[in-house]
Image (cartoon, rainbow, N blue to C red; front, side, top):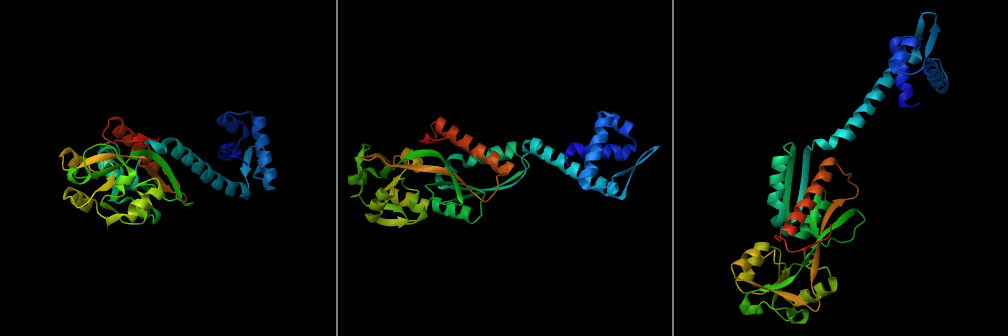
Length: 307
């Protein structure tokens, strides 16, 4: 049984006549009769009584007619949804972002949603990268921008950009803006993010990260606290220029490129594997990628695109 047979059956049922049904269905009468016979053979019961004045549905034919109408309506609805569903983005979407992601694309994302997707209700959550990942794993958000998420079978993580990390502090504490070897950095008074998932956001290389953590004088879980400590000269940190762009412009801090080796971190767009992709999620992923590419392309976000 297929949709074509059901359409032919409905035509015969409604017309009560093979000739008129064939005209309505735009098919030869012999072909129509053949399809009805095949349906009856499949169900092993007559669907019509052949009478001199036409076709009268049996009890089985009456029941099939009700089912056939429901089936064809459902198939038509599915076709419309697949073809037209993406044209109207509506519903709710919750997105979590590490602080750097929010700083770079938060406002453009909100502006685009408000102007282009009036039927979409957006919820944004900003936190340290590790906390953002936990929000995703607990299904508090649908999508998340996080740094260096751990390998997890339940997680789909797409790398979107790579950032270079710098040694950041006051000029009095770390010196002028010349490259600094990693070994020299380890001997400075470092203030880092606290241990755990948030600390993973700092570097791609976990071995180098452990060396920095072992020599840190303090661990924080606050971006505002970090900026305050740095500008007060309490210590230095490893960060991107994007993270400290305002105090750098104000010349309160300097950033020295770390060499031997160069330090990097990678930003990922993540979602849960067991959550099916919806039109809204698909469109928001596309929009997030586009906004990131625009920020990097304009030089507003110093990074290397990986998308």
